[in-house]
Amino acid sequence: MGDVLLVDGYNIIGAWPELTKLKENDLAGARDLLVEKMAEYQAYTGYKVIIIFDAHMVYGVGKKYHNFRVDVIYTRENETADERIEKLVLELKNIETRVYVATSDYTEQSVIFGNGALRKSARELLIEMKTIEQGIGKVVEKTKKHEPSTKLPLSKEIVEIFEKWRRGER
Image (tube, rainbow, N blue to C red; front, side, top):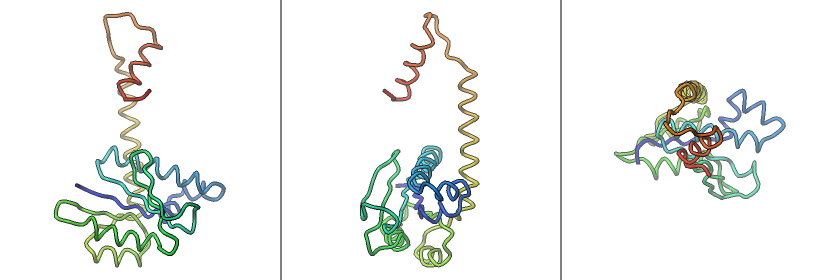
């Protein structure tokens, strides 16, 4: 399977300043933004990303969603994110798969890392994410500067439609 990153959703929301601020007025918005950022992380790094949220914080417990190609798991009613992460580490860990867990919960870390997962603190993940966003920004700028050349005279609207098709959008 390759590398897997398990993200303790509410722990990361509580640790990243932008998400913490958003959470004060819009918890669902903070969750959505984390999922979006982790989708970028997954696309850029090639890691399989799974975000785990505690059920007591959200309606619709014990469900698994697939947003932006990222798996989002809400724990069952009497299960914590820590417990689900422990189970996932044991399920996923094998010779071909390195499992990283992104959390700053030190109690959780000692148990999980005793099971063979690798640690990624909320701060480390934030620094990586900022680097990825800068890298994506540079690629976008480079792409904008290098306008596609064609011998056919195409209107700007048609070029935009072709570009969407190229990216798989409709």
